[in-house]
Structure formats: structure tokens, C-alpha cells
Image (cartoon, rainbow, N blue to C red; front, side, top):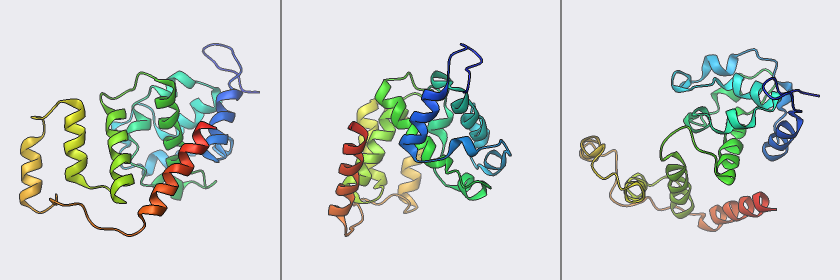
Length: 187
């Protein structure tokens, strides 16, 4: 039985919930820190990836779900590749983001849930991220039209942002993935 050091309550329920939702054996993490050592965005995190797993093990639900780390994770899978126990922290981070949104947790980063939603909508509509559409929709939802305009113009001039979304096959399969996820997370 895991005891929460801060409250003295059992932390098993949060651990079991994340294990069930992610399908990852979080209890296999023995804090080797290879995930944190290889993470390309660890410098921006308030809690390192291995520490997130430890906090889950101890049942520190609020600390984990309100951390900046779960939103900063780039889901590059470097951590999972380096893990000697094959724990996919990227899957766990995605699960934690979903839980935070479901519970209406005050997020560690401003507008991050809006970005997350717009990002997923872009993939659902286009099969991949359509940068210009993502930027437009994000700016429209946050009403922050002026920030980053110079960077955006520079990227467009260099051909990094395309006017039209790329064509793709497999719209039906992408929608099925989203529908399956939606059904699984609501049931």
C-alpha cells in the first residue's frame, strides 16, 4: 500500500487509475532517471519525468495534474526508448493531460488546454497538424492575435508554414481512432 506523504492517505487509487487508463506498468519504475537524462525538454519542466512517476506512485494527484510538465512533454518517446523497463512515459503524460482536462484542474501553463484541443482538432480534420490552421484557430480562441506575428511571418516567408493543408488518405481511420478514444474515455 502506498501512503501519501503529504496527507497520509492511500495513494493506490490514483496509481491504479493511471495504470488502467495508460496501460503502463508505472510500478516498474525504479527511478534510474534515464528518462529525465534523455528528455529534450526537461529544462522547462517543473517536475522531471521520473519524479512524475514517483508522485503518481505516492498518490499525489493534484501535484501531478497541475504540473507544467505534463503539458511541456513533447511526446517524442525518448524516455520510453531509454527506459530499461519499457515504461512509456509519453503515454502516461497523455493520460495525465486527459485527466487534468476531465477534472477541470487549473493547469500549469496558460492556454495549454486550448492549444491541446486545437492541436487534436487539426489532426482529426487533416490527418496531421496543419500549422496555419492550428495557429489561426489557437489565436482566434485565445484572442492573442499580435503575439508571435513576426515569427509567424518569418516562418511563412521561409516556406515553413503552408497556405493549404496537406492532402491525406485515411480520414475515416483517423476519425475512427478519435471516436474509439472518445468512447473509451467516457465509459
